[in-house]
Figure 1: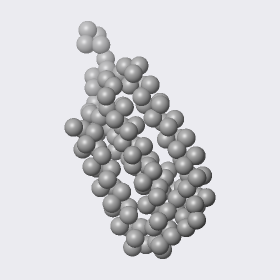
Figure 2 (figure 1 turned 180 degrees about the vertical axis):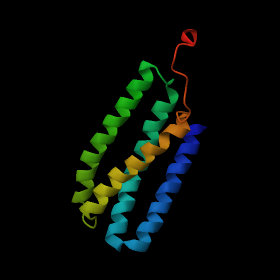
Figure 3 (figure 1 turned 90 degrees about the vertical axis):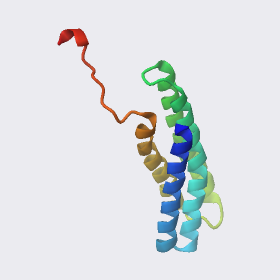
Figure 4 (figure 1 turned 90 degrees about the horizontal axis):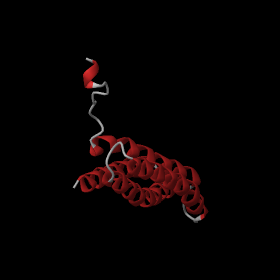
Length: 127
């Protein structure tokens, strides 16, 4: 359920960025931002799904988090390079859009994972 809520929030973010891009960029820049969103959205939701399935504080959680980070890094490098070779896409909006989408969606993860709450970290016996 939280994966669906997260995917919905990410889709809303993409819609807002697309609207702002449509109002402020030329057709080539808009196409570049939309191409970056088309790559970033499914990769980010898949990475979130892996992290959401693991229990926080476990090695599985760490593995999912590190794995997702590495996948994003490879996607920014590989897909970013590939997308910029396509005719009709501008390199700067494409790469900035790809990295920007990943960054913003990554910032959105903690509340959906329930990590926004603070926890008592001291030993209860030491009080």
